[in-house]
Length: 203
Image 1 (cartoon, rainbow, N blue to C red):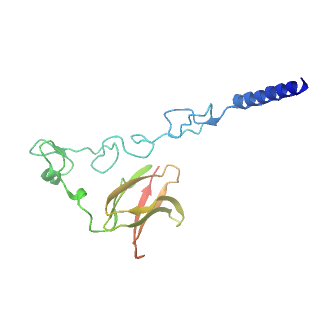
Image 2 (cartoon, rainbow, N blue to C red):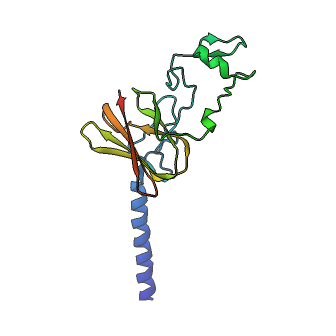
Image 3 (cartoon, one colour):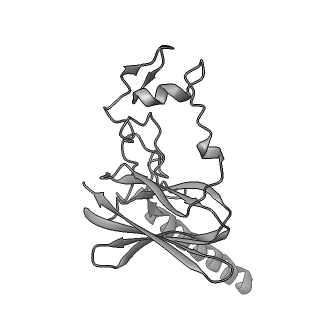
């Protein structure tokens, strides 16, 4: 009987400890609209992070990109082609079908160069898109450096096939200023190619 009583007391004690820890609750972001929402959190610790206007949590633009490459920008297409399509530049009228869709096939051709082809917007706040192309299979490494030469982010470190690629960098956790995007490709014969471009983050 004494052993049963001891076990009963231990069970009651364990339940009291469990109840006390549950009362304190798991802290974290409790807002389901936040990028860092924690489904197990009970107590909001005010660390919720939200995407920049017009972007999702991964830094992808969710609205139209304007003529200057800005997500949700104000420089909208205004030039009307003969087929009633509205474009940014008169030269864009040459590659449109009857539904105003681009018939430019260059994105589908394999590139004949290596390097960063475009970064936009630049200047940016806080997300920019880095477009690059590869003419050969190789190990691709893309890093972001601050103006003092310190690595602040590594965006990719993987093998990729020839083609056109893009990725986004969200600088929301970094200070305003100039940054360097470095792209390095190492081929199977250990030949290395490098491309650098400057970008400007303005808060």
